[in-house]
Image: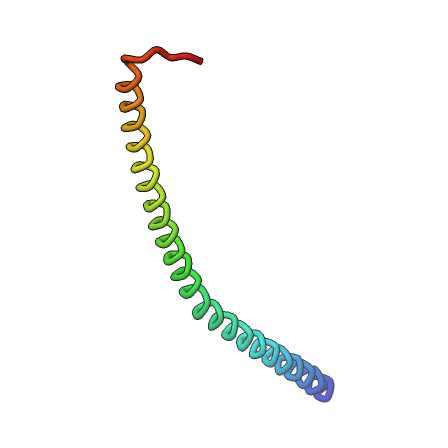
Length: 91
């Protein structure tokens, strides 16, 4: 009986050692993945914010140009109305 218990204990010990090794490998993989995430995410977030800022600045420039063009069109429309009051339109 003592030999059988000894064999069972050896088997359990061997299996525990295998499990221990698997856990260590998984832990190493998790550590590597965490390092990749810790290094990659802040860079990506910074890039996104920079891109958003550039896009917003460019959008503001475009809006300013549209505003200037709209004012020009309004001035031209007023000039056309003023110059066209005394003349008959012929088509």
